[in-house]
Amino acid sequence: MTRVQWQTLLLVTSGWAASSAAQDAATIEGGRVLYAYWCATCHGPGIGNNGVQHLPGTDALRVKYQGALPALLSERTDMTPELIKFYVRQGITIMPFFRKTEIDDVELDAIAAYLTRKNR
Image (cartoon, rainbow, N blue to C red; front, side):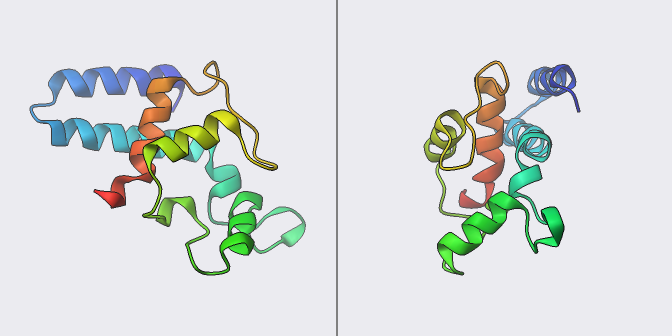
């Protein structure tokens, strides 16, 4: 889904939604799509380069947490929207930062909503 399609979906859904639950569901779904596009290439499930068992971001978190927390960000329940936004905007170790021209604030809010959906 392109940025324009995502923003159109968000606008249409928010205009038609009768409840905040429907709006939340639309935001979370949009966040899932954006996460798949921007984040899952490093932080998703799957095999990394040269046959490494995990993708680089997932593998780095697997090593860091040694099973104390899930390596897949989409399975975590301990993150806050503020923490997610901080790491996306600032980067950490080998993770690059993302500018507002790449992931705007509305899109980042949707990604944070998706990653914290299990916390609700």
